[in-house]
Image 1 (tube, rainbow, N blue to C red):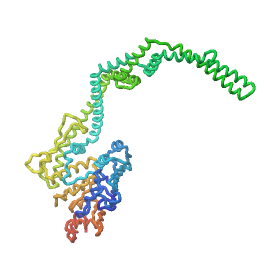
Image 2 (tube, one colour; image 1 turned 135 degrees about the vertical axis):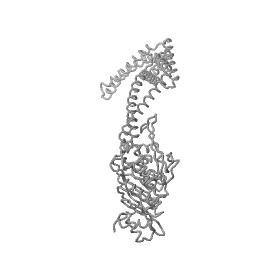
Image 3 (cartoon, rainbow, N blue to C red; image 1 turned 180 degrees about the vertical axis):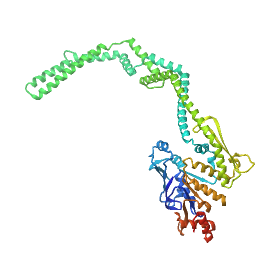
Length: 553
């Protein structure tokens, strides 16, 4: 239910704070007073595209905020999906900057326009005279019959099973597609894996092999340089070891008489030991460094094998080859397990499908059971709106395929004249007839389904007298089950409201402003009297207005 609307800097509205009540609210005002401006502000809250042309003051931003009571509207899943606070009261705010930037908020959390539209559609239904598109909406027709049939809960239960079935069936299709795809390439995958396994790859092997190949291919050159180094170190007369030894002996003699020289001698001894160890390692490396043509050829072949596999698979290292090998092993192992997984998944799908068929059958039975009484109720309501010869036929058709609402298509056939067979509404109903039919349909739904706030935008155009009175009574009755707001020019309808708002335009030579006020009892009498007789209020008009309002003198 819409509880409060706040509008600032929008078109002719400078600033507006408006509280809405339960039941049936009337909005009246002269043509051009700004009723369409109020609707425009509400449309922005519902997610319509915004333009800077709506700004009254081009240097300030426009802010429109609406507060709703959403208890009982079953919006929990929407708030969860959008990661929004789920509270009994919901506040929607729309801001439009002078630069044209639009921002939307739900409970102070920024949202995109699509999220705003989704929520708005669940909270407010703005219905104009020619707004009959809902009659072509399959979900609306299902809602029409499910409320009176008392199967909303059953349909929700069915929808949960349907969604589970769809997910399980989708997974089954994916597994089957995967099995088919892997079966088609299994031989190729097996060949690739066999080639990699045969290569017996080791992590980091390529860099080690390349290093060993480099060493072996230059073994003679390396040995010459190593032997030369050993000779320089070990020659008796002027070898480095002999020279270091003489150097240390001289330093040792000086160390006997000088502390500083003693420290240097100790460092020199460490140097001598380190160099001896270095020479030892030189000799050992020299002993190992021998030419081995056979091993060199083996290394060359190994390096070629690994590089060929890297190039073949368009990789960059032997590590990536090992990763590919693991992936191939995994895919082939999955192929082995897919058959059992498919069988298990098929069993789950079958269980859900069996339950789905059962629930769809129950829905079909309940929907068929209520169609006749709905037809009679619609005909009775249409008669009250000046269409006593109307015929309505509601067909509950059963399809082969399931959807979110079951296996039924609901078809509504209509005829406004005796002797004419009912046909598709769009082909036989005029604009006024469609308007009244939609009103009757929503009247029926209002008593059994939690409908959003409905705003009728001059739905009474083209009717008058007793028909207008009947329409007003119907709107009043709807207001007992839901919040109904009607913009009207007819006193017969205006008199049926439990609350009355008037839109007025005022201003001077410099500016014009739209304001909305809540009418008192006396003001309502004058307003309805004016609707009956014009600007000059006669005693007769006031008396008629009191009669319409059922006010005794």
